Image (cartoon, helix red, strand yellow):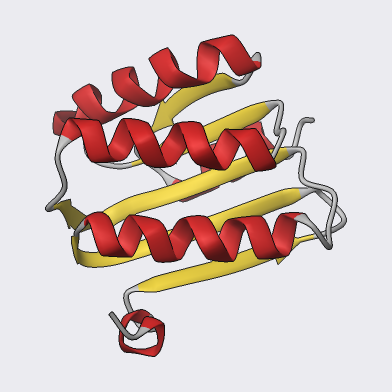
Length: 127
């Protein structure tokens, strides 16, 4: 899959002063999109110190399996060592948060769910 076709649906932003790397997803997100996000995350994390990851999934719908999410999160955490991960989404996406928490536990990453980007950003910036 051509990574450029997903540019509008997967945005990565970095706040170097706060040490926060933000991934913003829009529309249906499938396993290929997770892989693209992983590659971008690793690329940026090798150039910038990352204390927290913020995942903004408010405007997206999961089109991946739980196993695909688990694999992606685990591979990403092997390259990026954040202390916190903020997941922003609607209340009905708790299963994803639980999967991310489970995978993140052995890496000593604190995971918290939020419904607003502002609250998530404030918590992630506390690292």
